[in-house]
Length: 433
Image (cartoon, rainbow, N blue to C red; front, side, top):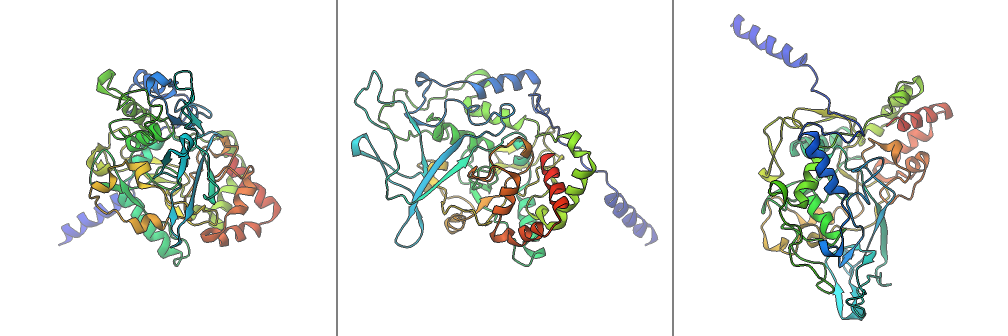
């Protein structure tokens, strides 16, 4: 018996004093985090930065000609000031409805998506009379902009287990007596038909997988189809056969290269000089004291190497597994008083066949429940963002803080009660992120 007790105590002690997990690599040097060699990462980055032409399948409706166009500050994969337009309206039942946008002089209606593309490839020299430009009808009273997100370090976010987010939401809600409760949303993993996973990418957590995310953006932002999103937004002015992205080097198509580039990217690095100042260190303490850290969680850990994620479609590799990283975000959906009422379209993000598949753990009411919620903005790299919050409408850190209402209202009140020097210290801490 004494021997068993001793073993148990020793095991407990080893667990208690277990060394911290290795840190995820950080930086803006365009180096790989170890998932692939630097040469492969550079080649994937070149594909991410490639400007698409009409001959490559661009359009017919689109917002940008390359991934880098929207994700490029301070380097490829970062955020930018570029935003996109989303609209819709409430039906008679009060539930959000996607817009109906006429094109081609009203002969075709674009449905099943809240995104409005700002650009079109027609009319052009070949099709001078084809008018397909989208414009928002007066009937669509719900209107908002969404600023482009940072993608650097998202390979580590993808490697966090679903259960970690479930547990985080549960503890958050319990600890704060149901006043702050992040929503976990299970979303389809397009490359694993029938499987869902906890959403973590996009302002509405609409994607769980970086491959699904890449296919989504390729179609909806550049108008280029793929094996995961094979259907054009419109067949008018469509000049390239489907799908547009063909397997190339190593049998990888464009979306595979995009996903691998993001998975291999380093996490955003802090400003080490500012972070080491006494002012910023005090600000970090005040950040926790007023409760900002409840949603802007400092540290998350990735799943063990070999863990299956994305409905079994991706295995966590050594470069991403068993790591800790510091996003200052919980990647959960919250109502902080800035919600726009928009519910993400199933067909827009998961394809036109989404309703023909039975998806595990998929709940349409849960999607409807996200109307006035937004994913907590991770604060890593914050000092490099000139436009803040989901709509980019806040241009100073103070403005962004004071916009927080809803679940965050009492946290904002605590911030406002700080002394002027304390507020400035907290802002200095944010400038170090």
